[in-house]
Image (tube, rainbow, N blue to C red; front, side, top):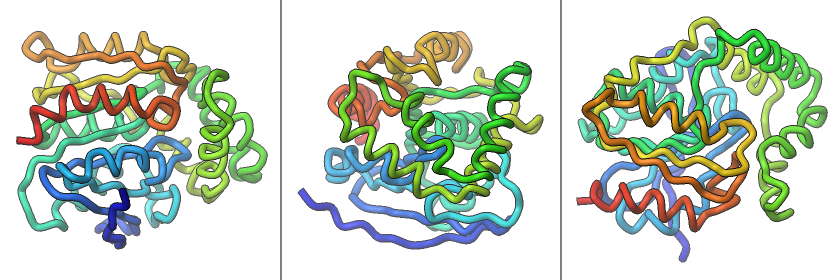
Length: 270
């Protein structure tokens, strides 16, 4: 089934020029990709959910077709998301679906603004207190500035499970290849900047689903298990679904991810 999308750009107050694709009908579902991703990371979900949800996906500033003037940071990404939603002219509470970096953005937003539901895929957290993690991201930024081809294949190897198909590796390789070196590097630096601190997870009170890959080297199952205990404090029930995949869950195991999303989204579509 073909789904026609409205494609447009939105410019925020801080100078981000954001590429957006929107399609479907129903409650608003916002999809946010991870480091090195684009809106294409969610393509397998569009046909399945667009008949019941308005699906809005965008390239984060510095990724894909989106650009920035002010260097990106996690707080600025939250401002950008708020600006996109405000520009639509409604007060509708969104369902936020975030992968990796996108999940970080989703959780930060949900601690500050009303959200109907959260779906966190390969969830991320701040690692600024871990010197080795900061050194890794800083080094990755340096290599990215030297040229995306120099980091492309190692990134694919870290993201995609050995058991996954060559087609998945090809799609991920193409997404990485499309990145602007300076944008990719700036996003790496945003992730390891001192401004990236964990939010107060106990403030997240909406229904939440964590999706973890059993072969994910970047965001292991233990991270989602920790977040399951932290989100919402003692008042919130947080579901956790493990799928057979590496870090590119949607591409590697579309069926498993769709099933997990359905278990939460079904109750939110009414």
